[in-house]
Each structure stands twice: as C-alpha cells, then as structure tokens.
Length: 373
Ligand SMILES: *Cc1c(COP(=O)(O)O)cnc(C)c1O
Image (cartoon, rainbow, N blue to C red; front, top):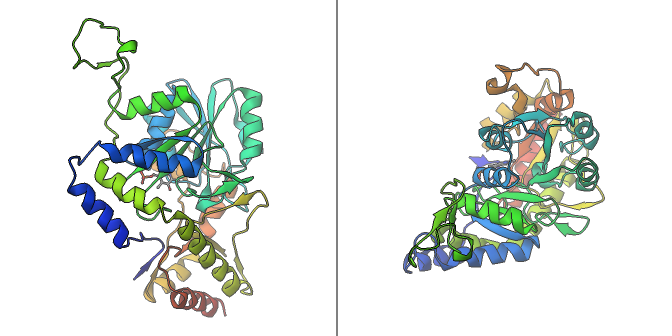
C-alpha cells in the first residue's frame, strides 16, 4: 500500500543515530545545539528544538503570553494542533476563511475578524505553499498583533526568497515522519526575537533558569537552578537530534525530489477534466509536503475508495477544524466558513515523498485519468 506520505531514511541516518546511542548522552546533550544550529542555517532564525510540532505551537503561544481573554485568528483548514495548543492556554479560537486557490488563510477575512482582544494571527502554510505573509504582516503591524506561522508543512519553502522561519514573529515546524524532514517525533520553534526565543526555550525546559545573574535566590550553591514561571518537558532527545542532523544535510535534494514529483503530477494530470490542480503564487518557492488535488465533491469519496482498492492510500487534509465537536458544542459555526467547507469536500492529497517512484506516480495518475474517463 502506497501512503500519501512517508519518511526517507538512508544509511547515513542510521549511522548517525547509532553513533549517538553509543555516546554519553541519550537525551539533552551536545547534538541538540548542533541540530538547532543546522536549523538556524536553513531558516535564518534562532531555533529551539522541541519534542513535536504540537509542542512547538504550545511554546510559541506561551512565548507571546497568550492567556484567557485573548483571541487568536486561525484558518479552519489545518491540523487541530494549531488551535488546540492556543485553547490549552485559555485563548478564544477565532476562525478566518481561506483563499480558495492555496487553502491558506485569507488576509481580508483576517482583518474582518480582528477585535480589541485579538493577540495573534496564525497562518498555516498549507501543503508547503507559504501563506500570504506579506499581506498578513501589514495587517499584524497595523493592529499591533503577533504573526505566528505554523510551518509544519513548509520547512524548506521560501517566501519572496526568504526561508520560512525568518518571516513571522514566531514560526513552528514539525518533524513527524510524513513531514519534509523527520526526527520520528519532533519539532522546532524559530524566531529572530530574543525575548520570544528565551520564553519559548524556557517553557520547553520546565521553566528552569540556570543563569545565576537572573536568580532571585542568590545564596544557594553552584547546583542551584530556579523557576520563575511554569514550563513543561518538551525536550528533543539527542538520539532524535542525531536523526534530524543527518536529515537536514539532505534537505536540498529532498526539496528537488519533492518538486520533481509535484511537477510530474502537474504534467500527468494537466489534461484531465473535472479536476483542479494546485497552483503556485509568484512570491513563493514551496517545498511541497503533499499534492492537494481537488475534484468534484460528488466524486471524491468514490475516487478515494477506487485508489485505495488499487493500492494507494490517499488522505483528506483537513476536516475543517471549526466542525469538530469540541467547537460545535460551544458555538455552531457550520456554514460560516464556506470556502473551507467546500475545500474540504473536494480535496484529496496524493502521495508525495522522497522514494516515490516514477512508475508509482504514473500508476496513480493513470488510475485518476481512468476514473474520470
Ligand atoms: C503535523 C502538524 C502539526 C503537529 O505536529 P506534530 O509533530 O504531529 O505534533 C501541527 N500543525 C500542522 C499544520 C501539522 O501538519
């Protein structure tokens, strides 16, 4: 069975992890900093490695001091971790509809959703295509809001030539196996704001302060560490950083390969009627996470089942977040974000990962062509 996404592990990755297993550190050791530095080089931002993309979002929201009474504006078409972590801090989740071409949050819908309680705009780079970050930046600055980018899909993507991570006030990444690189479970927070960086880092490490110049108890011994605000354990172990380091060394070839697969789908499916292919805005250079095909909503489920019967397990990204019972039982928002709801009914994510063969791409393309013939 061919899945919509999977990891790529080579001998270098295996050796890197084996070497770390033989070292003195299993969890926080020297490889954390090596991995963070490699991420910094790619993203052109300071980075904190954490244990998942969800943890990264939680750290980002903590860093901006998100709390009860605050509102965050988010897109419905995302994985629910974008919202769940803000809700965990007591914030009210507000939705703004998406742009129908990219499925990224629509800046004009964002502006319409701003209130005196809004603290942040959260963009998700759907499928790897960066959101409309320039327009969102202007709105964030106009209203004094933070711009947060959930770049779980878009490590390696560029917006106006700038890498994801260097653009928003805080950016978060995920290294789950289907994502652009993997550490099994893992994630990172990226920012060029030193204050936000330190808050995110501390929150991910139990809130512990080790620098004596900041202590409020000054008479303890050299062993002393203290906590000024509560944190959690979101550390990424050395073993997983070892995998991340060797994965990052391959990111340029990963990007080329993902791009090549994307282009092959465009070529194979370009003449099929009744389907819509993803497009690319002029300002971006995406590292594609999956291939978001759109089909007539009356045929989507049959196509999904047809491909499944023939060995291809596609995916639907995503069930609109505002329709989850956790939201609907408080406020029924059904029908309020029609572009997102229609997108959900039409979308089907085709396999896109390093290691997918030309034969497999042709095979699934031909099944789709046959299905609509
Ligand atoms: C994968 C993903 C997350 C969560 O990342 P985990 O590493 O699985 O915790 C958050 N947001 C989006 C958009 C994702 O795709």
